[in-house]
Image (tube, rainbow, N blue to C red; front, side):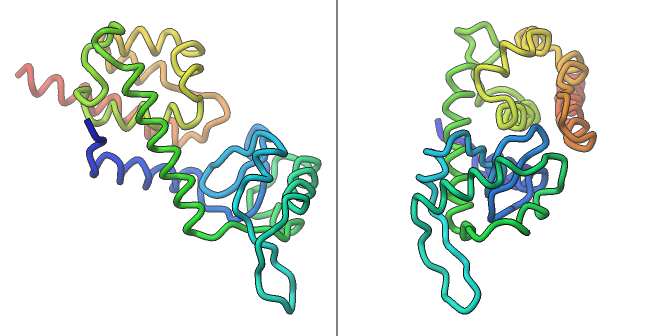
Length: 205
């Protein structure tokens, strides 16, 4: 079953809202090298595979070489953490264009959807398959998996997982807090689970 388009649009909108769109390498809140719309660049090899452009004064942009991407990855990885993403642009000369940043995000969303669909099924003990969970819960799980990854989502937050399995959306709201994530983003996910509580109450009325 394909992901509903209005759910997908909301996922993309909120990820960009919270991750921003940064065309150059930077270090995120936990010090990981990142680029585009929250795309984690975990290794030098991953950096070398990215489509990036070299920007030089007086010259048109040209495709960056692998060695240039490795060098810029190493440079950014060696910079201090704790700065806003744009600050790292003072030290970089490689950028991604908007089309490639969009493609990376769309690939992430498609991958996350496959993982969520495999994990959240009735056969695995959840109240419904992922596509039949309340839409606010689907949106909350997309945001959670973006930060945590598919394995950590269930393993690192067992109380949250138990709440989801029992359909306890109020408990899920309480257990969805993530350290090192902004207050606004945690409140967004909490509010989604509480919206599912409201939906459940209206259905029962």
